[in-house]
Image (tube, rainbow, N blue to C red; front, side, top):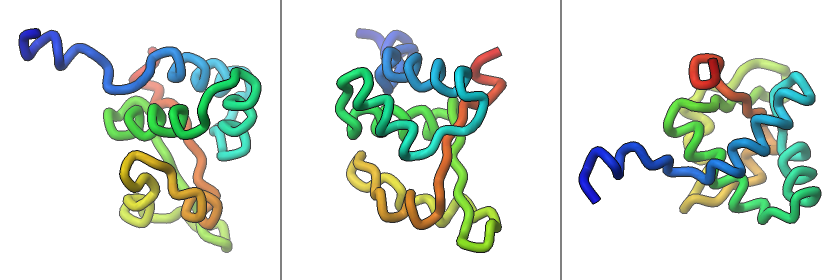
Length: 109
């Protein structure tokens, strides 16, 4: 394959992207850990696969993630850098900072 073709191939599972996007649109709010666990259970998807695709969507500026501390203050993005370790979600960090994810409007016009 040539380099251009490789760059055009998404680094995430587009079916999982569609499931997450549909859920976001249905609920009309950012999605949290419980939402993704429910999706994984409902569609018989491995939770880790779903979250790995989500990490790739964030990395490629298709989705955003944000968290807040126990006082409701937004956590700097740098504090969430350790959220995915070896392509696996660190649930302790996600829970500690009440991390939520949502698609970026520019990615889905």
